Each structure stands twice: as structure tokens, then as C-alpha cells.
Image (cartoon, one colour):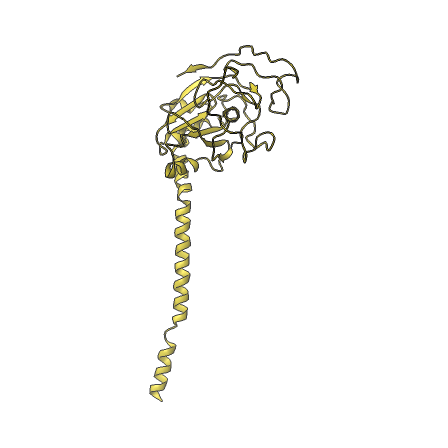
Length: 274
């Protein structure tokens, strides 16, 4: 009898089912935590980069902090000069960062475009205070591409697209400002964005303008007009162009009455500055 009772007690003393269940729950929780840490790492690292670049945010006493960023080049451009969706502009810079542009702006609400987008639409978004990250798709891939993307996805007044034939791996544009770089880890990327994205101190023409998608028939971010890699022809509009009759304006108006002749008269040209 004693032996039998001892045997029963020993069998009840080790709850293997409970142990296995607890181990499984702990393992699952650990895997969830590890997965979260891995997946959230790029976002957390980007938050650190943005914190480090916070000293480049514009203020009344430092209206254009990009002047403190080595390598930034600037030029002065006249805003609100529009062309038709069928017209091209003979831009003076590659990629351009100002000048005549399409009446419809590219959506710049943190959009990462997988394919190259028509330049004239992208330039219009710069006029609204956006920053455009362009990259050479033959030179920027894998981790470097992801590192650029995390700076853009979901960030208002920011957009990114490949730019075939770019002379540097990376080029950042805001209206009247450009910075070309070799490395996606370069801290100047975050400094440029902090200094110039929606900077309210007169560094871009249309403060308060929208970056929202206009939609099909105007500018559809899911089916944007394609980039044209060919050299602009003799009918391309020059940098001192005054705008095309019938080209769309910001609020649904027109540059000139429909059917009016295009003036083509010179406007102030871009003047490079240092």
C-alpha cells in the first residue's frame, strides 16, 4: 500500500503538460519581441538620425540652416510658371530643383515611387515645400535603398523616386536647393530635410500649398506620368519661359484665358548662388 501511494504521488508531482505549455508561451513571446525589435529597428534608427539633425530646423534667427550644410548648392527660380502635361522643360540642372513645371504637382505625402516619374510634376511638388530624394537605380539598391526609403515613407512633404542616369548615387532637391551624395548613411540627408522641408521662411514660393494626391486625370500616384530619359527637343520650354496658355493653376484656374496665345516672354532666369 505504501509503495502504491508513493508511486501515485510521484506521478502527480511533475506537471509536464503545464511546463510544456509555459515554455511554448515564453518562446512565442520571445519570438514576437525579437520580430518587433528587428522590424522596428529601421524606424527607431531613423528617429535617432532625425534627433541628431534637429539643430538644423529653421528659426527666425536662422531662416535657412541648409547654408551650414557642406555641399548644398542653391539657385533662384521664379515660381508659378506652368506648362501643359504634354510639354517638356529644358531644365538647367539634373535633377532640376526649380523652374517651369507642370500645372499638376506630384503627390508628396511620404510617397516612395518605385519607378521614375515625369520631372515636370516632381518640380511642382518642390514649389510646395517638399523634399525630393532622387537616386540612381543602378547604384542604390538593397540596404542603401531601404535606408533612403525609411526617411520618406509616411513623412509629409517628402517623396522619393529613381532617376536614371543620375551622376551621383543620391541627389536631394528642395526648391532652389540641391545636395548630391554618395552614401545613404550620410547625416547630411537628415540635415537637409530638417532645414528645408516646409521651411516657412521664404525658401520656396507657395507656403501652405498642398502635397495631397490629385487623383486620376490630374496626377495619380498609383499611375504617375513616366519619366522621359531622352534629351528635350527644340520645342522644350526654356528656363525663362513665362507659362503656357491653358496650363492648370493651383486652385483650378488657368495661367491665361483658354485659347489665349502663349507669350513665351522671358522671366527672371535662375541665378546660381553659393
